Length: 71
Image 1 (cartoon, helix red, strand yellow):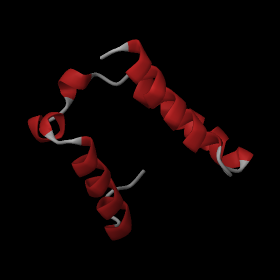
Image 2 (tube, one colour):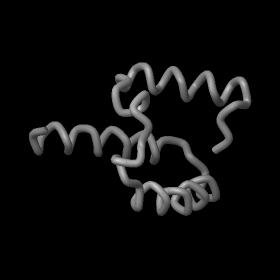
Image 3 (tube, helix red, strand yellow):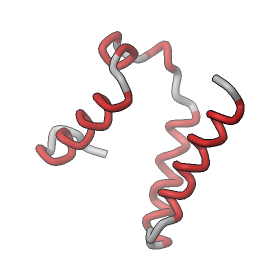
Image 4 (tube, one colour):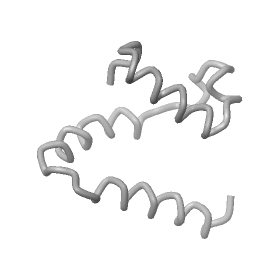
């Protein structure tokens, strides 16, 4: 992936994180990010490694709505 594309993704995530998010929420999210930083992609199940970003977003949204995903 090109540096410009990576920067675009990181900028988008950073902007979404900054938009109207109370400080306490940011603090809690930062605590969870530590787990993400030590994340190993090889440990992912095949189904997660092969799904698209759009599919993953839909799965996460439905999981949160149904209560099956506990974050």
